[in-house]
Image 1 (cartoon, helix red, strand yellow):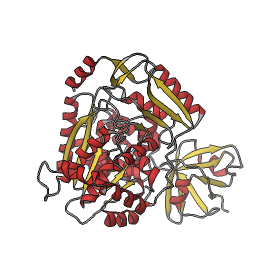
Image 2 (tube, helix red, strand yellow):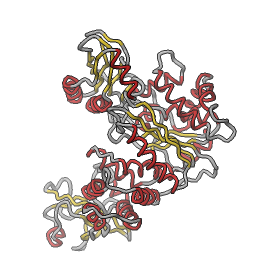
Image 3 (cartoon, helix red, strand yellow):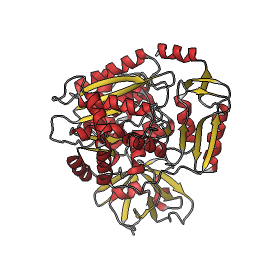
Image 4 (cartoon, helix red, strand yellow):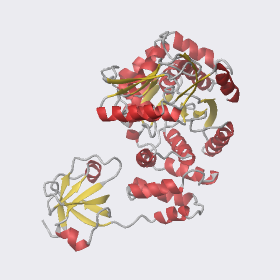
Length: 511
């Protein structure tokens, strides 16, 4: 081994969308080159270059002085064998960070700036700290509508695009913020059973207790390769998959990996994320669901109308047929909050179970009906009746079973976590409000979405009469620490307001 090379070692650590390198403090190259912890280095092997954030190690059992460790992601990208010799150099700082600094100072960026930034992020030239700086710089109200279009187009061009070779490829997306609300898992089988193409690729949850991919994963495999995705959609006219494996707008997944722990979900990033992913997935016709409510992401109707105009502006410039539905976001949709609980709700609706949550069923039929009306052979106003017939006839359930079989069925175990806490009403009256944010936070504290069995099961919804001491909901957790955190959060604020029938009528009028 020469003095300027190191033996590569695979370090079995998942660093999630960030390459991390490990170098022993006693390494000669470390001392000679003046590397510092958390600096960026360039690792080269047979013409392949990988950029990584350096961690300095004092334990020779992790890496020895003559070795360079790489996390799982970085090792896979380098395409080397264990003990292969690699060279290590200082990495040149990404030039596009100049544009990020300009944005932090309030300047307006152009298309070239956003393209350079997204290209550098995809090439792993940005650390998570640098990505966080970009997210904060382009955060709430910091992008004008032209900048938003530039960002969306740059994100779209950062990866592959699917082409289904059909003139009508439908999709729907909710902006989030409403726990439960697992309408996509009902819309897709209904629309696919009608015969329309609806390849639904979803991100995992960012700040919610479950996303569509997290919940579908309870029933079937969602990590599908592009070839698998193509085959399933051709065969079944739809899918419910995670979009991360298909390399569709990959910069979005990398930014989400930073947004999630920071709890960032700004409007500009949200619009760019949704539209870039939908366009990359080959969608031509899209329904956007914007729930409005006191504890939803969008609190007031005027905000919803402004957001709709943003979606329509960018959608028009990207040449996608886009319609926005503004819906009731005053409370969680369905009863379950968390992957297994939400999967249970979905299957109850598909099975036409009389105990199925009526609000989830109704909203899903409305969304599916609007999508079915994209079909040129369907007259306006007929979509809802067609969707209802598909659901009530059992054709949607048959299609869902076919999708599960095609994607790879999981051994379905809908048993919930063993730790359970019941939360009770503290007075007589009527449920006048349910705090979406608080209910989602309690479910996340309980372990959702990482723990599929964790979450919150609602027994009372808006307008429900309750007696003091009656159960409002149950908290499920798998681990004592999570259980304790969720219990403490619910004890501080259980998320429910109990009042009078007059108050619930006033809230309906206000909405």
